[in-house]
Image 1: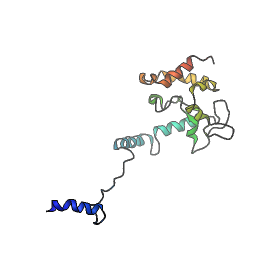
Image 2: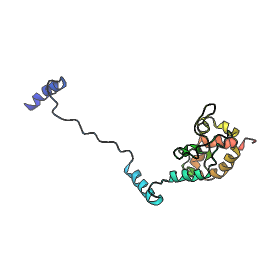
Image 3: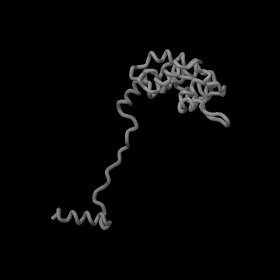
Image 4: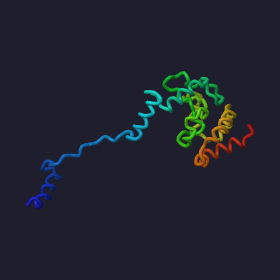
Length: 177
């Protein structure tokens, strides 16, 4: 008899004539980071200190090398003296996500102005988002070339196959500046 009544009860619940007899499943929060990654970060904290990560340590060391002005040639101030935003003025030559082997190498960066002001552009964003062909016009392109020659030897074969590497390599070896 219970089986015969079940469709009727379901119809009554759907039409709102009877209250629901079962509750909703309890919602579980989705983990923000995996247990494995959490364990790796904890191990890293023991090695580097409580509030340090390899990335943060790298940025702080680069800040010591910054001069306070954009090196692209615009001579505008960078964010070196801004404790909250100094990282924004450190622009990777080889993007971190494409080239993990040199991600934290001490030569894989140039100093760029990050914030656009009236009449000027954000040089960091220009370097990251505009055509790489414009890099040859930067005042520090010779420095980028020198760093490229050193960093290129440290890249993996897989990284050397990327379109980014091949284009930058073409610019380095085929410009007369």
